Image 1: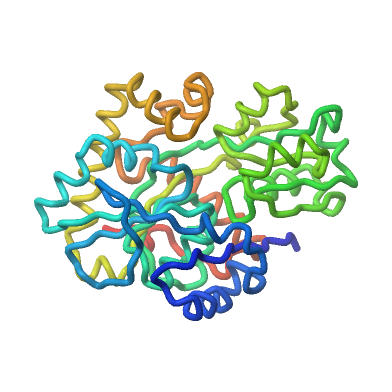
Image 2: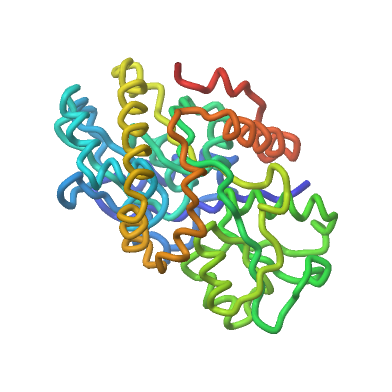
Length: 350
């Protein structure tokens, strides 16, 4: 059976109880194989940003505060990030009683899952694989929206290294475990029947370029923006999910059932806000691309390649995105990577 050890970094020391988080991390057996011993990621595990100024993640049940977690750069991207930057999010949510909005940045999906389970977040923006794994474990989240679909993952090799999938036999391949890139890599290896011939190791994307340069790994399965960037730096591309039906990813927004029970109208209002942001983003694409490039530190031309606007959904659950999501779920369940199957319709917040 394919190995799917989802790495969970330790959470930075702040107002949370470390003992509580350690207990939660150990309980989430499907999300990790044990409490993380890697403290190098702890400083970046959680970074909270208020809608207007730096803040902190708290476990407060104050319903006037909305706590949003996201995976990625210093600021969220896509419709959520654009709604934040343009003031749409704060303006509209204040109308329904939210006086404060906090944003917590996580290095990967499993870390964000921890915070959801521990009750430290109300809403999470993350990739399909960690979101499905958490739901399949029985954790009570609801799917609010697909913000992007057909998100491309790339398999990039070291220079003067392998140039084909066949040449990867006997080699070490790295990826950020628990991500949509990890799911792509597992699917690719299964499809080409070389799963048993390679070793998969966990490596955060921030360390990928150095590992390839030093020859520590033969290849790295990476994200939609880092793939084209590494290619521009002379690293050869072996494959991408665009070459395989069903192996590209989707970006999701989920919320806890506990939060939604207190805010039954939230999903509809939130989706209205993100639909407005998605339309505004497309209408002002050059401005958006400049913003996206600024916060991710990639050149604008790389962002345009990695984030085509046709992948941005203006509706909560676009049919093509739902189809991709169903395929991802079936794969994870069939390989024993997701603990149990469930109906997407039962997960969707109506």
